[in-house]
Length: 569
Image 1 (cartoon, rainbow, N blue to C red):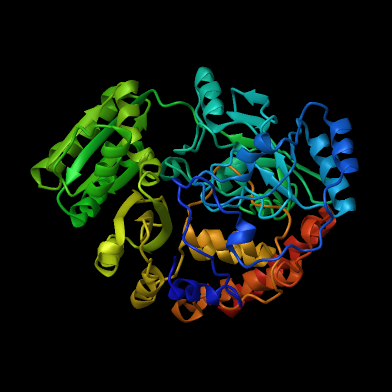
Image 2 (cartoon, one colour; image 1 turned 90 degrees about the horizontal axis):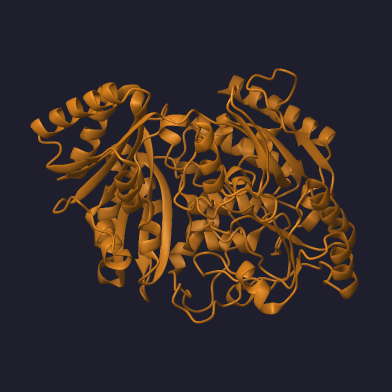
């Protein structure tokens, strides 16, 4: 069980900390303990589902209402098999109108609802805590339109990312994001969680590539911001409120997204480095020599490769190095790209940055190399319970946290590994990567946040960010699970309704470690939360009952607050 200090870590985000009962279940457990039993939480006075409610939904969408215990069970458990709800009903709408009717009815009846996409998220946001109705977007999988001239795709929120990629590749385009969970995650969940992924280095975040959204609010009213224009100066950019909102403001039903053309030449290099300092120096050289064709730079340590080979039977072509990097280039001229890549490899080898490596140019070998990186998360789940942290640190300090954590935990943890994205355009001083702890009956000491404070950098770990969002939205129970396994969910909307807990105001989050501008930004976030009453009212479906004029008013209020803050800084 997690140590008391780990739960104390969250006191800066929440006045009260929920403690789990018993050991974490892990993927190998025969039965996942219900969330409502594992944590000291209580159900708010939502209405109970009745026969008349089920009859209404069956009339609304005949053949798409799931009620059997065994049939509902997969929707109640998250991918990591660490969280389990007790829902008795799954609804599978096919249109925005049906989603609107469902939410309007639930709002009037005071029935709690949990939207769910591909259920591939790792923070428990896609599964109910109690007996909420599950609103699945699995059948909202239609491509509405695609413009080959502009590269703009309009589709429903339930489209699987991999299916969209295959569809676009036939048209000579690709999706601007790529994830390890692409075979199951939904584009609506990707947008709702503002997923980054493996192509962020080249194509940027979804806040830039998503052009428009169609969203249904909790009272059933639809907000149509489904623009298909890259440049739109007609008014407020309301879609930005819903990107990354994780379902707390509404359910995304359709997405308009800008897709880049498919590169004509793709190369992948898998290289071995003798130290993390060499990994960083290789990255610097790589950026300078590859320039515009660099599309991905991933790193992983040797322990990651051991787990991938042991549990997934994948074979790495490069062995005997403490660290490995995967570099991808994509462009329009194969000769030009190969020449630049070869020049870089010669320079890296001659200077001793790289000791071994291999290059792939055909699709099959490229996919084989990518699987070594993409399936690390899967490999980590095979030996026990997994704790994950997605942390921002000065790039030179990234791996120090892994080595310090290993020293601190000793034999109580099976594995402590570091891997992930090393760079994103425009923010070179900080990098993101995942710290994964594979836990089996030991005790996790809450070292990451303390290490951050010692370095006096902004605490930006997914654990605290997820908990803070849950606190603002009143989703206290779901926030607890972001402590144990966190990675930005890629396939599901966070629950629309609130899961009850004692009403406490969120306290400052590590204010002492923040600069003046960061403190002001955090204060602004709290003011927004107070404006929305998310921190003070656990009101269930009414959380999302905001009309378009109200959202416009909110946006104007935010702009005034930011302007005042800019002047004061």
